Length: 620
Image (tube, rainbow, N blue to C red; front, side, top):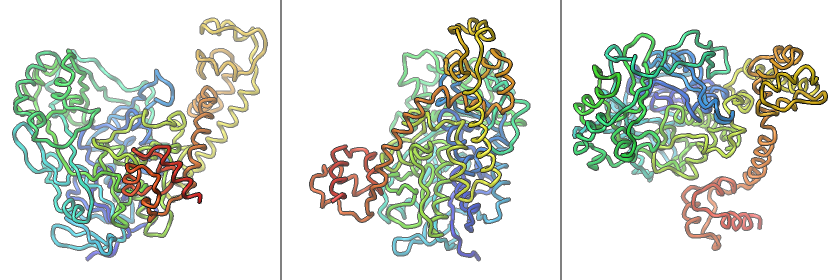
């Protein structure tokens, strides 16, 4: 019935979709197994992509040749660049998306990828021979052979949904949980754990009073995620902001004795930075109010996502409390919020390629690794798909360094440090965040994506042209001089010191009060030269010049630390032979099996002394 596939992907969420697309576009024959073809790439929680650090990840996925940025652009309702009041390392793109269109665009993209086959059924187990995965088994008892398998099960592995004192099996609202795989993996020697996440109630937008809320429009000049030719928005939908109050909190507190979280029925840890509303008012009792974001679900639906009101309290408590929020006095509920508890597998059991250490050719990506968020899942799926393809075609694993991408930071953190709670990406997790900006993801990664066979020739040519134009404009601005009599009046207006002699435009641009837009106002000759180039190129030149010393410092630090990656450690190395290692380091190293001294140095519990001891030992 089925041929043998190069890559079988189990699960069609954000991770599974990127994994299938990457492997197929690189030339593998792929089977995508999903429990429901109608929920491919479902936005299970909020209908948005990107945000702080997450927006950088979406741009990196796009630069490498993944689909998330393109799908986000085609389905967006609103675009905002966050953190513009801060430095460019913090700027983060975010889109509000049409939930139904997002899923539709993903499905269309996958169906138009010729190397992908689909099968709608629950995968209940793996076929493993001699510690190597060779296929999957379905609920109907069908066995499908595959040279590699990528598991992207999301919240479905033994998922339990909690609403007040009610609990029932499910991987998502109205969808059953997946069984069998966890139990088999434990039998094979894997360690598992439980995590939880939650979602807010959905509301009928026709029943809301927006006049008492704060409008949150999109950017005046909306941008986009993809470096391809997707179109920016010409119209946008607004989001809205309102707040909880004491009356809301008191209503919610009435249900605390029925809370599955407070009563201990939920054992898994939830995301630290996205707590439920009951957790917020319990932990931050001194706060008089909490922000609520009112987000539309699509162009042609009245359904509203109540961001900030995630809850697992009884549905009647949710209903009474939400109607005490300003603007929600007459709110009609489509469905209540809920918490979901599910199995995950601590990611310290993986190699840097996301292949498992115990079973060859088996890869984990997404929430199965303990992460939270569409973007974190999507980038893991992309990397797992790339590496599954490479493995079955006898190619080297594709590993991104911490200095190359937020994707590299995320995977390095997961494999070497593990996570006890749902892992979410933040800019603060990256030590090279001035290098890893959202604006230069194409310059950093498109050449790598092209070598993999994911980024097109057209994409690569576009990046080469961009780099050349940046170099040309930088050179031109260094050679251009401005005269005191031309610019001093404007400099005074900008509250920056005047000049007494002709100086380079670069010297002005390095001043904190002056950017590209100010330069255009100061001197017509400079304005004419700048306008020969795109806004994107102008912005790159400004950032490179203003932050030149910081960028150079980070690059030198990265080069110094990356020298440790040249020291390879054999996979079967006997750490017990090195008596000078601390007992904690020996335990961690035997479990994680780092591939290099550099990776070893980033493992929690391994001290600099342990690194020195092993480096000397290997040197001998």
